Image (cartoon, rainbow, N blue to C red; front, side, top):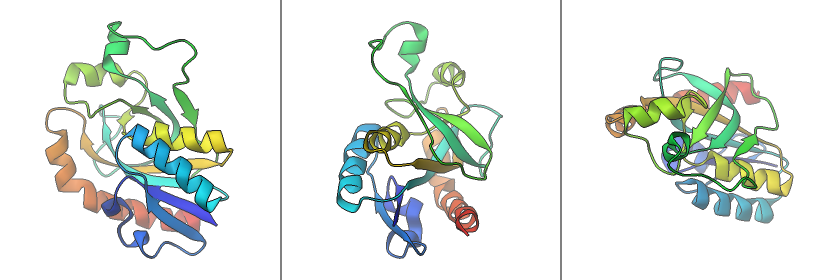
Length: 189
């Protein structure tokens, strides 16, 4: 059995109750810490062979557009204050987790900040690490790496990062999530 995850029910849509054959589905909750704790519990409870996370993300710049679908190559924990030199992490803290099984989608690194970025200067800084922003993936990937369970993620771009991000996301997230599910269904065979 494989485990299909998303942050909250609209991203899984009908798959929350009726996932593809061979898959069990659940929600991690929103934010990296909640996602890490929930994913660790789900891994322990269900012992899946692998994990696939589905979700929406924001694009930092024109490398990605609303509606684009991507596989995540790695999830990177970062904040704009770190990149400005106004904060730092202990050198021993891990901040990057790679996807450990491939998906046949264009692949990108995804930045996981502590909160949704609304400042365009901060978005420019964070874009140096990857073209997209997501809130849960470091937690999901960290839990999977800790348990030795292969993990991957597929995301759909629902908004541009910046001051209008939430309103754009509200307009597009359901349609983008449905498009992502259709593409993933083809990938899973």
